[in-house]
Amino acid sequence: MADTSSHLSWLIIRDHNAFLLKRRNIKKPFSTEANNLTNLSSFRYSGLVHKKSLGVVPADKGIQVVYKRPKYQTKPAKATVKVTLKHRPRRTLKKLKNIVNENRYRRDLRQAALRRASAILRSQRPASAKKGKAAAGAGAPAAAAAAAPKKAE
Image (cartoon, rainbow, N blue to C red; front, side, top):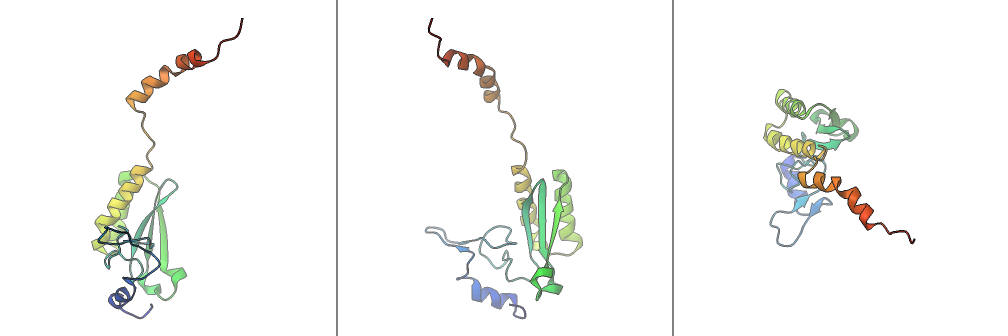
């Protein structure tokens, strides 16, 4: 859909496309398309129809920001740019905010991108030891010795 407007493209694909997830008792269907920050099927967050779109996906140790360049909208291989941010969480969020602000890149998506990046970074944190688990771990060898079968004399 190279030369069509984004509104016309949305009207064509909004009800029927391969990325829709429709379920009973859910008013707004979900979407699994790339560059959709909220996974909602809506015109604003659609990564398919806009010339400029922004996506945040997890990387090994950080996040990967994926965005489309409108100059190459007819050449999909050159259109997407992937930037990996592997800094501390606060610095990563600041760099993401700078990418959106300084490049004048879809300011309406800034808050959604920051929320998604924050959730990804939070999920990558190592699990902290719980107080109850540490106490149970200390008594585990004694419990294992008691449960072991005794030798016949």
